[in-house]
Amino acid sequence: METKDMLESFGLSKETIALGEKFEAELKERFEEIDRTAEYNQLKVIKAMQDNRLSDIHFAATTGYGYNDIGRETLEKVYASVFHTEDALVRPQITCGTHALTIALAAILRPGDELLSPVGKPYDTLEGVIGIKEQKGSLSEFGVSYRQVDLLEDGSFDYEGIRKAINTKTKMVTIQRSKGYQTRPTLSVERIGELISFIRSIKPEVVIMVDNCYGEFVEKKEPSDVGADLCVGSLIKNPGGGLVASGGYIAGKTEYIESCAFRLTAPGLGKEVGATLGINQSMFQGLFLAPTVVASALKGAIFAARIYESLGYKCIPNGTEPRYDIIQAVTLGSADKLIAFCGGIQAASPVDSFVVPEGWAMPGYNSDVIMAAGNFIQGSSIELSADGPITEPYAVYFQGGLTWYHAKLGILTSLDRVLKTAKD
Ligand SMILES: *Cc1c(COP(=O)(O)O)cnc(C)c1O
Image 1: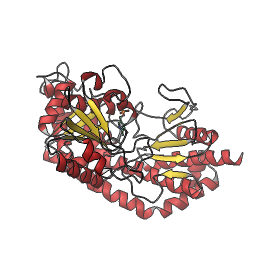
Image 2: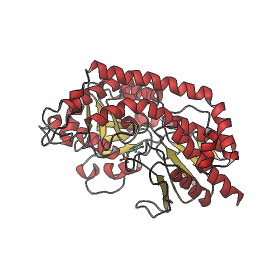
Image 3: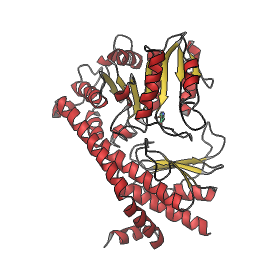
Image 4: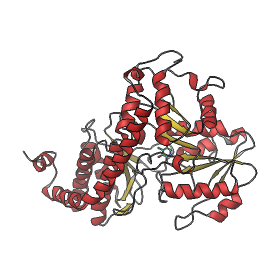
């Protein structure tokens, strides 16, 4: 049996398979470039593991307080090596990306301080954390103020606005690398570096945090290589490599990591406690796999963008521009196509392939939202997943793919269904 026949056995039409072959062939050079970045990052991770003398003993479980968990301590050293930072906090007790970011914000900011976002509105879940949206327990409730400078129309930094926004109260700056689910461009590490230099030229002592979600290992450099004091992210996204069941990380300066640890556990206890209950091995192995997993997700995103834009759908980013995160948006233009797309991603999943996703009234949204995810880890968005609000302009956001072959199957299956919907 040929691979083509296997694809047909998933119900794909010859037309869809042919489209896939055409664009895969066209993308050969682009994919090679992605592989070269993945190789560099793979070497960076192996080097970090070797330099920190990673050994079988580090995979053992600890319980209770988790004192002297040398696996956990080594994992944090390995992360610090990968991110070229003084220290890191990498824990299964950090429940998600929002939690990791909240820890960092609450660790640094004190009543009377001000937080600045020079890149526009942060990720939705942070609105309540900061207090942009009223929320019990927000930073605002603790007397921390917030200021925001939006990007200019063309996506560039509003340097004049940023200069004006920085004042004596400005203690911390938060920079979101990925566009998340907004339409602004994702920031390259180079651009983040330029922004950081500008901010430091005005106020050198300000603490600069980068929300690194979805950006890890997409480039050879990380924001900590260009001056960020703290890099923060989720382990059920890129750096977990699809293997980590739960967790988040914060990498940065020793002084700030200590504050983060005091906030996560308790002042005085900090990094000393936190049993790992046998999860260390997956944390190391996931990090080891992360560069190639991210490469697979990137290939899937570019493959989809190239195909869909050739069919006349608007794609952000488009199929040829450089990538700085793994998220792909495709504007499908109708509810039927959005539902068909998500149904295809679900049907191509290794888990729950028999489930049919439907729109539901998700809290915090004004319209029904449809989600597709046949995941090994609940909510993991480094695994192939798609979602979108069922309303104008009917855009689907999708990301992930632990292997390129799965990403390809998912995209072709969704394409097959969208094409059939268009014909009806
Ligand atoms: C995913 C993400 C977060 C955090 O989300 P969680 O669902 O809490 O892990 C924050 N910022 C960005 C840009 C993200 O993509």
